[in-house]
Image 1: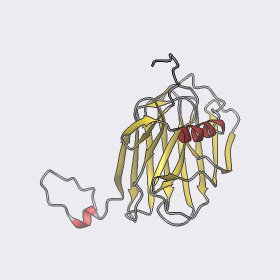
Image 2: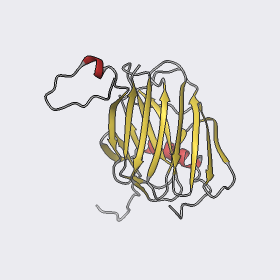
Image 3: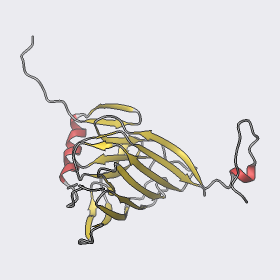
Length: 47
Length: 181
């Protein structure tokens, strides 16, 4: 039965040549990484 | 010895082949809209030290960072990473230090701008049961930097994971070369 509830897909990871969706555990580790890797201060608006 | 030029079908000369300093171990294309790229079973006893080149590709979020973690047997090490990433804009602005002091996440080895990934780094002794050191640099449209540090765990690693700090990445290549011992 289609409940109409859609689950959000998780980000994709690549292992060698295989690309797949993250597992729940991998997603938790990914969020931890995102929290401690802020962008650099300078913007890249010129080459 | 002059630089040898090899032709198809030619018998390879041992002295010339033994003088080859860098050997391409792995060339990995980055997929579409991925957040991490893992390359396993790449570090072996064939080489003590490696050169890694990350180039090209695109990113959904501006000003992100690319970090790495080491892996063995399909398991990622998430502790004891130390690094300092020094960078400054070409306009002569402030020299900034981005550091990790025993962090769970990686070395910072690349910074993405409109040039795509632009980074090379040396990874020293990843497959030796000793701390692994790295030294590298990167450049983008508005700034450039140097990064170095080490992973303070005495384990022999056979793989590496690259992760983007925000958004996703598409395309580009990761090339891993072994330095001849």
